[in-house]
Length: 201
Image (tube, rainbow, N blue to C red):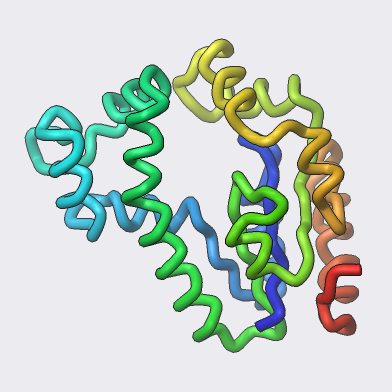
């Protein structure tokens, strides 16, 4: 497998970048998408979540009560770890299966909380960071969601710091300009990835 690990903080634009790689015919394996599938109505993770968090974690139609669960895990770090212990192994299993079955020239593995020495980093031949200033992250997330500024800042603080991500990355896309310039940067990296062996150096 030739895998590019794509990462970046909330609101950095990872999805926009991964969509651009997808338009170029590259398989994208997205940990967030897999997580949503596992926790959608009827998803494989729901019985385990109900067992650990009870009926309050669900709406009347059997869907996951995401607002309730989001508040719960942010207020209680131990409950966050419990939820992660359910989801993370399942996400890894599905992601590896998708990577191994891919037929594209290389794969994009999109993981928001990738850290040096992690399972995700070990799977990736190179790390591509989508980066932008923190204030721009906050503005983007507030615009697209119902979260307050304080909630967004809390999420950012719980993620790897910007400096940590930059020091860890092999390639960096500064997502601060137009979509067209972003597309040009993705195309440049795409050509590099196609002709290289995608080995970290």
